[in-house]
Each structure stands twice: as C-alpha cells, then as structure tokens.
Amino acid sequence: MRLVRGLRVTVWRLRRTLRRYGVAGTIREAVRLLRTRGAGEDARSRSLDFDRRHGTETAGIVRLGALRIESPNRDLGVRYQPSDPDGFRSLVEALPVDLKDYVFVDLGSGKGRVLLLASEYPFRRVVGVEFAQELNEITERNFALYDSTRRRCGDVRTVTADAADYLLPEEPVVLYLYNPFAPEVLRCHLERNRDSLERGSRPVYVLVTGARELVGVLEAAGFERLRSGGEDGGRGIFASADAPGARARPPDV
Image (cartoon, rainbow, N blue to C red; front, side, top):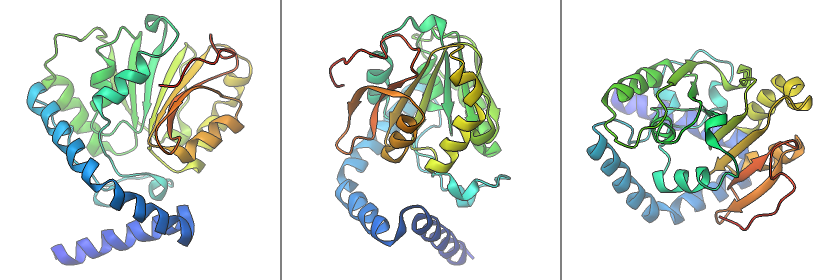
C-alpha cells in the first residue's frame, strides 16, 4: 500500500509540474533541484535547529497530495516547505515603513513558521491564509508552543481559505509569498482585490522569495520592484503605486 501511495503522489507531482512548466520547464526544474540538493541539506539542518530552539514543528516538506484539500486550485498549490529565518528577516527589515501601521499576511502559511517569525516584529496584526486545514491545525499548536522572548505582536491568527478568494484587509498590508502556488492563483487573488488596489485606499508591499514565476504577475498588475535578490530573480520587495518609496531605487538586498 505504501508503494502504491508513493507512486500515486509521484504521478500527481509529475502531471502538475508538466502542466505548470511544460516539458522544457520540467527538465530545467529537475536540473535546478539537482544543483541545489547540497544547499537543501544545509537548509534542512537549520530548519530543524529552529524547531529545537523553539519547541515547534515547522520543519520538513509536506506534499499536497498527502493532504485533504477541498479547493479547485489544489493542483495549482506547491508543497509546504519552511522559509529560512535569516532570509525572511532580511526582507522585513528592508521595508521602508513603520511596521506598527501594517497587517502582515502570509498567503500559503503552511505550518506557520513565517507567522511566528513575523510575530517578532511590531505588526498591527499577523494573518496566515492556508487552504489545507491539516496544516492550519499544526500552526495552531505551534502558536501555543512557540517560546520566544522576541515576540512583539500578540495578534496572530490563521484563516482556512483559498488564496485566490482571499480579500486583503483595508489597512496597510505587507504580503508574503514563499513560492506558494502557480501564477494563476496570484492573478485571481489580485483580480479579487483589484478595486481596493486601484483606488489606492492603502499601501501594499509584497515580499517574494523562491517564486520567480510570480514576479511577472506582480509587475503586470502595477507593482514596482523596490529591491531584488536571488540567483534567479525570485526574491525581492514590491510595492503598490501609492506605497512610500515606490519611486525610490534602493540598493539590492
């Protein structure tokens, strides 16, 4: 039974990758994964160290094929993999704003590591949006377990929802995307929020990491790249047209 389940998950992943990238793109993705295998081992070690220090369960990779997800966008999602704390902090600390005025939103929050890290900053509120209820249940346990003297935001919550349908708060927002889904989902999300984005009712910053495919979607929607980084250009800070610093060109991070 375990072998059969493994084959089903492998076939599901292959079909999804071919649908997203095509044959040539799938080959490029396979080559990239082979090149980064060594770096991945180091990242896994750091990931486990985070949980050992904080008593949480945020490490490890979770394939969506192993979860119960009721969403038409299930096959457009990406496996759960935790963000690197240092990389996340470098993006947040490069924001040209007073964080206490902003709501932090993580689309595809998984087991909640980024929510825990975001709680170390004085955001007005921290929200995780995740369409897998099983992952949200793990996140809630992690909230209770998290042991950090650096916590500065006490309002941390999760929402079980599809990111494509999620309405952003009307307050100023910092949006976080760690390779959470295919570009189609981000397009749907931005379309869903188009009215509030176009009327410029509040500034929106987007932190992107490990998701080069989403960069073009943001730029096509009118977001301006403030800072960039990463070998493949899949890391950076983007801002809505009305956001402070949107016309500035700070150095890369």
